[in-house]
Image (cartoon, rainbow, N blue to C red; front, side):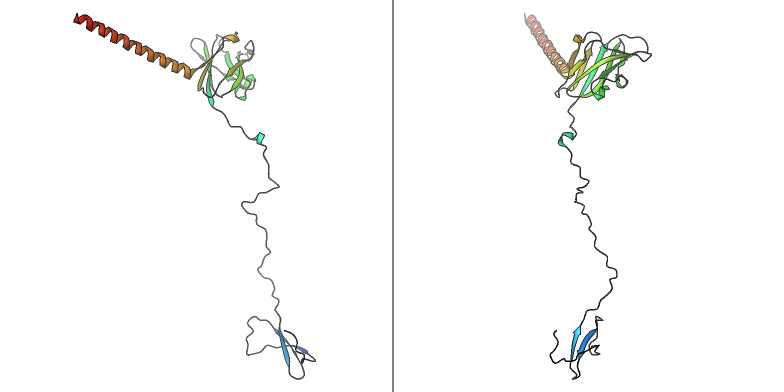
Length: 224
């Protein structure tokens, strides 16, 4: 509101009229002159801040901390394991009492060529040593070592043995010779079992055919 031009010689004062209640406790300032003309002005009252706290930024649950973000190299991502093949090592070899044969190889599961982490083989009647392991399908190298009673290690002579398996296999038997690496044989047990089943089936068929033929001959002789 602008001052009236007739408000000359203003006098500053505070006027609280009795007819209008001052609900907001806001004082009314007015200017007055000698000719009883006044101009009222309302000014907001300053109130002290009580209970109001400053705003702080709250991180969202979906926000990403860029400072601690680690970008993983695709080459460093863990590789998925392939199919697991049950490999059985078998060797016929006589040794002295207290000695033992073990399998050691290039892969960590074979001890990484460390004799202290080699896989022990179990003795059975007839001096047959065996060891079974679950190995991922693929290629690996190994050797059989002899651990004497005093702790000395005797390595299998000749080159490192090599075995190749495929995901189509389930069980494999590796027959090993201590001295001659060329006598090593790798047999797919599933294929062997399937061949045996087929041979048994054919054998049963031959027996049935032979029996039918004999019955026919007996019947013919009886008629005669």
